[in-house]
Every structure is written in structure tokens, then in C-alpha cells.
Image (cartoon, one colour):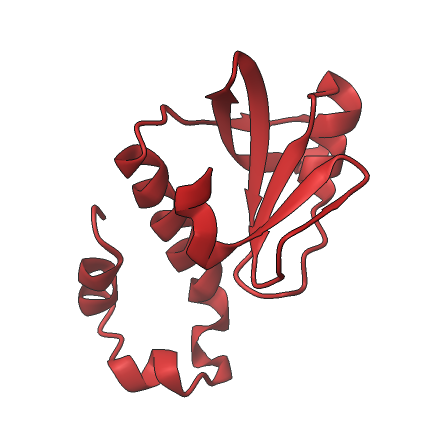
Length: 122
């Protein structure tokens, strides 16, 4: 969907579901976060792709920044284990990777953590 609000309406999600979270949306949060990030990347002028590897590994987005291909992984919460991102980094050795989640800004072992609300900074 071109807008997260329209996506929520289509899925019949009311504002209270977002403001007062329950486990009812656990299966949908990831898709909603990925949709939001995709919309922000497009608004920022980025072409985006995805990566799939062996054993079902995947990375949500690949974008080009400063002539380099950068993998981006999206996590809807602060739990940010990303096996697919680790597999991609091991196989292709990008300059760095970006993980978008509920965590604050940081840089650790070649992975930039960026809060979801700040995806426009990419």
C-alpha cells in the first residue's frame, strides 16, 4: 500500500490497536513496519531491492548509497536478531549494513542501528 494509514484501514486496525498494543497485531507489525520503510525509501528517491540467500535467509531491502550496495533489515520492535542480514554480510561483505528498529542510533560491528522513525535520514 502506498500509505501505512490506508494499509491499517484495509486491515481494519483502529488507532487504539496501535496506541495500546496487544498481541493481536504481533503477526502484522513486521509487515506494517516494512511497508512504512518502503514508502519512506521511495519518498527519499531510493530504488530498492531485496536479497534472498540459502536456507531461506532474506534481507528486507538493498539500496545504493554513495556507490555502494547497503543491506537494510527492518524490525518492528527492539528485538533485532537478524540472521538474514548476518548471512548477507558474511557472503557479500558490504561496507556496512543498516538495521531499522525500535532501538536508538548506534554503530556496532559494521551495523548502523537507526530508529524506525528516522528512516528519512538514510
